[in-house]
Amino acid sequence: MKLLPNYFKRIGWIAFVASFILTSINNWDETRNSFWEGWYNGVDKVMPENVLIQKPYEYLIVSGWHWIFDITAVVAVLLVCFAADKNEDELMSKLRLESVAIATIIWTAVFLLIHAITPDLNINISILSLLPILTYLIVFGIKKQSIYL
Image 1 (spheres, rainbow, N blue to C red):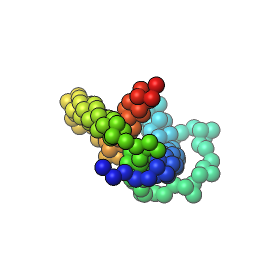
Image 2 (cartoon, rainbow, N blue to C red; image 1 turned 180 degrees about the vertical axis):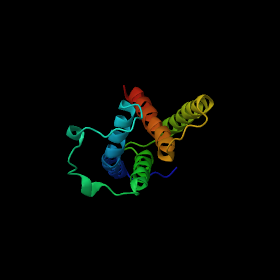
Image 3 (cartoon, rainbow, N blue to C red; image 1 turned 60 degrees about the horizontal axis):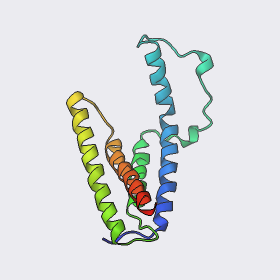
C-alpha cells in the first residue's frame, strides 16, 4: 500500500488542532445557551446580565459554515492515518491492518448498541466518521509501542 510521506502527519495534526479550536469557538454560544435553557428547565427566562460575555472571537465565527471545520478535522485525521512512519516495513503494514480491524469491530458494536438503545438519536456525521479513525490511531499507537518495548 502506498502511503503519504511522513511530514503529512505534522500537517494533519496541525490542521486537526486548528479545526478543533475553531469548532469549539463556533459552538461556544450555542453550548452556553443550551446550558442556561437546561438550568432553567426550559422556562422562558433570560440569561442573567453578568453571564453575558464579550466576544473578542466574533470575527472567527462563520455563520452556517461550521461544517467546513468538521470536514477539515476528518481530512486532517485521515492525513495522519495515511502518512508513513519513518521506519515503515511489513510489520507496520500488519499492525495497520490489525488496528483497522479492531477499530471497525469496536465502533460497529458501539453504533449498533447506540442505535438499539436510542433509535431516534441524531448524531453529527463528522462524529460518526471521526471516532473510528481516532480509535484506529490509538490502537495503532498502542500496538506500535508494544512492539518497540
